[in-house]
Image (cartoon, rainbow, N blue to C red):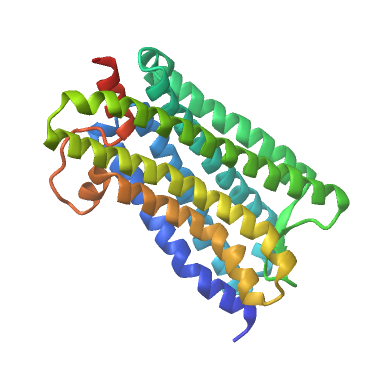
Length: 302
């Protein structure tokens, strides 16, 4: 079997899982009343970005490679543009979600005004406009991210200028945003722990146990998502410099780039019981699944 077919066969199942999972998450968040707020709007758009990334691999990249379609390869730079756009949308919305949680904990009295439904929708629109404009300038006009037969995957146009865009405009920019996300999340967790010490003294042991679980879910979700995105960025850009085995490079780059959006969806399902129960057709309640909102409520009542 040709190596490019092996690549496509390896990416086909993970992109299928990513597409189905993230579109299901979007549908669940859209339907659940407990997500009818700023955090829910951001989570829905996060799922859209992840779903579109996986779907583009499933419906364009894999068929292009498996069927060796010359026309699709000729226009593969459009596929690359959409993939980079969706990836950067995902990163930017992660940043917005982190800011949402940070504000809920550090400025609970101002939170309803800062992240009102209108302001959140304006923020989401701004993210799409800014990210889309930058992506068009970098990846559609200045440089192409196209399918290269030699490596059987997508790469930037081979030029010094495109090398700068790939390094500074793609890697360093996204790595910096992810680093900011991790920092914001750590500050949020620090505040959550500080507030929890005041809250637990006034609630029952049973309520304290539930509160602790919510706090830990929030901690694990934020750390996991930030760690996964940072790990993917590091492996994608650094592993090829130190390893020559084609499968090591493939799983650290191409496969990781697709898998990070699948893992992102899995993290959402795992740490949000309402979404999990909805997808499994189990009875759901209307308690907001974000531990930050719970902390916010507790904090404002003391």
